[in-house]
Length: 336
Image (tube, one colour):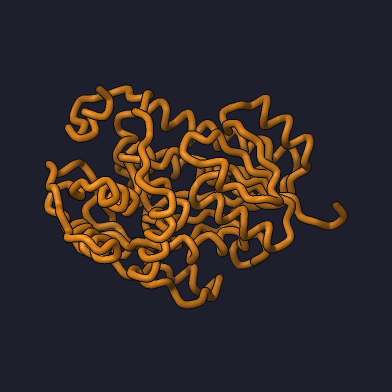
């Protein structure tokens, strides 16, 4: 393969991961996509990628592919990214999102990987002041955020002990083409789009005045892919995503308008979640000098066009629920 860079993309059949893998392929990398297809789809892995079906929790498989491919870079995007649900799947969350990540870090050190790129989350901030900045002390409010922050700390320790270079991104509320809109627990845009296609109302927890900055995947994935080539990104943590925050109600109205239907909301009891979560991207802008961001309406249009081609989706019941006490009733019904 000569001087071609070889990159591992975990979660590369998933939503953000498949876009990162494509960006790497376009930049001339040989890409190996590792995904267990628990949330992703084989169709998301286009021609040119080497696909391996499996999990980051499978240590024997990791040993084999690291020995076989001699990776230059590791892009770790595999995770079960359901913040609210993580309260009720604590063991599953830590095994997949924390232990699985440590399995990768160990092998990156053993095989002299040049750079490890990790997608964390603004969930690490918890109910911090907004806009959230990288110098805030993280105060994660759910096990998902706890796991993500633990991996961030472990990467910093691995850099100091073993010289493993890394970049951490904290994206938030990413949406766009290839999103799994059949998942009822996460990705509010996907849930809204799917419900409209099924002729069902849009579920809103509480009053719907929670604020989030919804980030188009095309404004996120290319920069994640480019991180190892940017000296200013080495051993740094960056918030990444959209600057403008919207309420969930406003989001619902915009999606309904894009799909040409009346906005029919179904209000559900409020759940235990951070009410206002959006971040500053000043540090990211200084390091990456990004282009203009995609507006929410434009991004929704692209997502809707893609989702309509696939039609309404459904996913099987989540089989790893460990606790049901205080679970939102709408979720509890999905486990019965």
